[in-house]
Amino acid sequence: MQNTPRWVRRLDGTPFITYALLAITIIVFALETLAGGSESVTVLIRFGARYNTAIWMGEWWRFITPIFLHIGLTHILMNGLTLYFLGVLCEQVFGHWRFLTIYLVSGIAGNVASFVFNPDVVSAGASTALFGLMGAFLLLGDTFRHQPQVGAVARQFAVFAAINLIFNLFSSSVDIYGHIGGLIGGFLIAGLLGAPNIGEMPRWRQVISGVFLIGVLGFLLHFGYTQALL
Image (cartoon, rainbow, N blue to C red; front, side):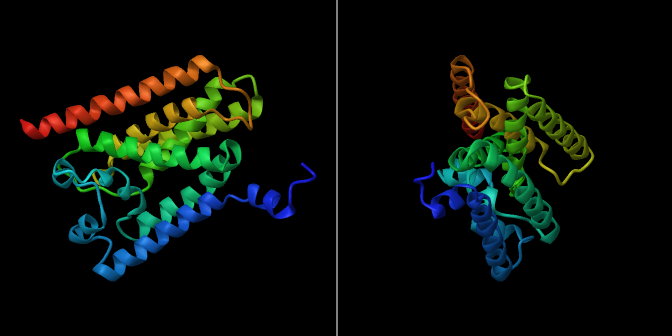
């Protein structure tokens, strides 16, 4: 460890993935604004919002690009602040590349769920991925329940997720299906990847998490595309 260059140690302790995700999100929002406004449906679709008609025509990347799009200033401010606080903590716990994988896979899972259960709405936002980070901590709380600090943080995330989901029920502008999909996706991908900084994940849990993640996403995609043919 002492032979490791100082800049490498400093970089390893810096949440640079979180900073990069924030930077990309802000840049995309600025481009949306310059292109005609982030609340314009036309602009959102042009920039890659989740739009089922386009997905049915083969634009599969719309399961990914909505993670970096936002609708209005309030939307990006709330998600940006949440990404900063949750991202820094999750990146420290899971490590840089596991954190990035959890963020992206959760966002994709949330958009797939929205694709199936909320097909008539154009949607965008990092909330699917952010709920995935909460789901990842729920997984840690269940797996490492013998560690008091991990359990305490997991309970806080559980309360935060529950409050947000309850709020979603009373807001017609919120895509609750995307949030639930992201939460479940984050739980499963975290189970597959593990968190070596905390402890060893049981192999059986990793296998089951991976099988369920692939199985659920595969089923939802098949169901969603089948609906388009009816």
